Length: 149
Image (cartoon, rainbow, N blue to C red; front, top):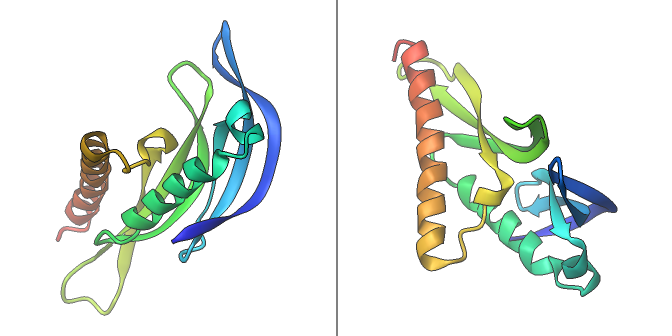
């Protein structure tokens, strides 16, 4: 597992009306799936040459989620949060194939905040992974129910 850095740009991340953060916005492509996602990295961390650890953790977590049953792809997206600010997320495509059909499937996206995609810390990592799995399972169950299966 790993990633390739596709692009980076210095910018300001707005956290609230009065709090901003100097970041380098990095776009990566994960290996082996090829998912393209973006994430802000603290500018001082990037400038110190230490962004690789954060980006590798993100890429590894995405690849780990892609091994879950019914998850077929991933792509980075930006959404507006409750405060109207941009928030980076990963849209995992979840697929349901109704038993007895000839491969016809329905899909939906499970949105996961980029901040939840770091499973390296033992206890916190297990909790975050369980939350991501619950999100995936909710989307799958909704697809299954909607398909009458």
